[in-house]
Length: 193
Image (cartoon, rainbow, N blue to C red; front, side, top):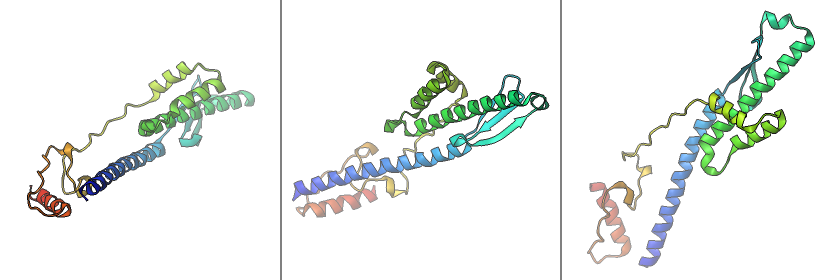
């Protein structure tokens, strides 16, 4: 009975660890969605007569033309708009990939490299140049410290006691009762500490 109980306790702890990991990932997904919603990439042509603001998924949020742009021949203006649009959308895609990698990088997704390689091939620009552009574009991400103290949020505590929390594991009860009785006694003894 005791071996079976120990196996069940180990399985429960494993399950609880997986659930904690899922909770952390879900919090990361919500942060990622928030960052993606705010994403903007701005590009201008060489003489700054055309400016494009792109958002997530390549959505065009704004297009600004100066008087100088309006004085260009139609074909030149169209070419300037198209190239500036492409640049803004490409920058937005790189930023989007960076955000995904910042939040999901531990899952083996390397969206940034995939986007850079695709853009390098499509635009005929060396991948290293695109990586450098991305490094220049990307804001530094602030790391939020993880709260390590336990508080009244019992969802973060193990009913079996965590070896990581600095508290010693209580010795087995000498009551002569069953393993279940000992488990319950230890469980309630933890509340008294």
